[in-house]
Image (cartoon, rainbow, N blue to C red; front, side):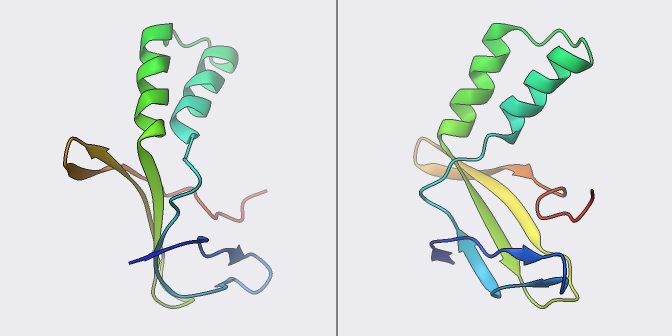
Length: 101
């Protein structure tokens, strides 16, 4: 696994710019809190401030990782979070790098 800039998917060629297993130590994923915020604002969900803070705390300890093997296979995109001395997969991200409009 290499630390650094994550591979980018090109929707025109339908290929990844680089293949391998990468994680980004500089950028923190924020999809959980952004989705919860959207749910509260648009879907009238009842996610309270305590739960929103728990999501942000989780994100602050998380990194996104991407494993690409070749342009025809689905990538494995996930978030890892450190809890104490152990690392856990906390999110499996099936929407990242999608080419939907």
